[in-house]
Image 1 (cartoon, rainbow, N blue to C red):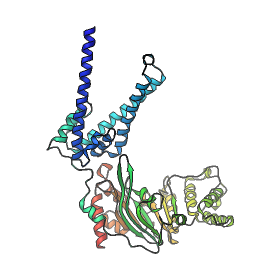
Image 2: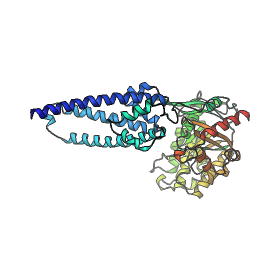
Image 3: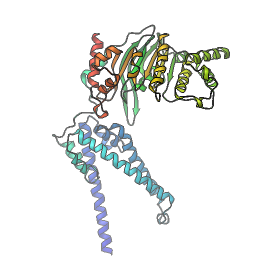
Image 4: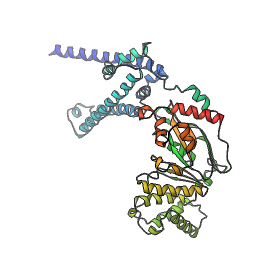
Length: 454
C-alpha cells in the first residue's frame, strides 16, 4: 500500500512538471504566432488577454471576448471551490453550493471547448492547413505542438496580418473633406473609436459628405458596417472625432441649442400602452420642445403633428389598441414634435407589410420636401427606392473598420456598383463569410479616387 502511494505521488509530481513544461512551450509558440500575425508577442504572457488575441489571429475577433471570459469564469469557480473546501470537515460534505458550482463549471467548460474548436479551426484556415491539425489543438498536453511548429516554422505563414491595412486605402482615405454648407448637413468624420477588450478599436474612419436640405437619404451597409455608430455620431449621441454642422452650426459645440433640430427614431418603440395617443404626444412635447414654449403652443404643435401623420381620428385611443402602422407613425410623431431640420429613422418599416411601409415612406418623402433632411436605415430599400434622392453606403474594410464606399444619387450608385438593386449593392460590399462578394476594399478605394478627381 505504501509503495502504491509513493508511486502515485511520483506520478502526480511528474504530471505536474510535464504540465508546466507543456504550458511554457505553448506560451513560447504563442509568442511567435502573435508576432507572425502582427501582434506584440508579449500578449502571450498575459492571462485571459492572450485568448482574445488568439481569436483575433484566427479571424474570430467577435468570439474572443466569450472565449477569454469563459476562462475567467472557470478560474473564479476554481478559486471559490478552494476557499469553501479549506477545512477537512467542509471537504467531506457536498452541499447545494457545491452542486451549483459543479454545474456552472461544466457549463462554462463546454462553452470554452466549443469556442476553442471554432478559434483553432480559424487558425488552421488562416495558415491554410488541413483540418486534422485541430486534433492537436484541443488538449493542454498537445497544444504546444502546433503553436511551436506554426510559430517557428518558416513555411507556415498566415494569409493576412491583423494590423495590415491596404496601403493605398490608407493613403487615399485621409485626403480631402466635404465643403461646409450654410444650408444642409456637413459631416467630416475623421475617426470614431472605442476601447474594447484590451485595445483601441476604430469603428469608423474618414467619412466626408455634404447633404443638401430637402434630401431623403438611404443609409446602407451590412451588419457591423457602422450604420448605427455613424447615426449616433451625427446626431451627437456618441460624438466622434469629427466636425458635424447642421445649417452652418456646429452640432457638437452647440449641442444644447441644436438638440431640438435633430430627431432620431430608434427601431424599438418606447411608448406606454395604457396612455392615449394625445397624452403620449403631449408628454413628448414637454420633453422635446424648449422650456419657453407654452402649454397652448405645445397643444397646437401636437394637433399639427397628429394631422400630418393621420393620427387625429385615433387621438383618444390607447396606444396598445393601435395597429402596427399606427404605432410606427406615433413613434415617428414623438420625434417630429420638435420640427427637426435633420430627421433620422432606424428601420421605421420594421414589421410593416409592403402597402403600410409604402404609405409611411411617402409621408417621410413629404417631410423631406418641406426642406428637411431625412436619413433612413432600412433592410428592404428596393420597394421604396424611387422615393429617395441619395444613398450612403458604408462598408467594412480589410481591417474591419467602417468606411464610406459611396455617397451620391441612386442612379449614380447603380452605375458605380454596376448593380440595379440596393440589396445587391449591400451584398457586393459584405465579406464573403457573411454571404457577400467581399469587394468592400475595392469600392472604398474606387470611391476615394472618384471623390478626389470629381
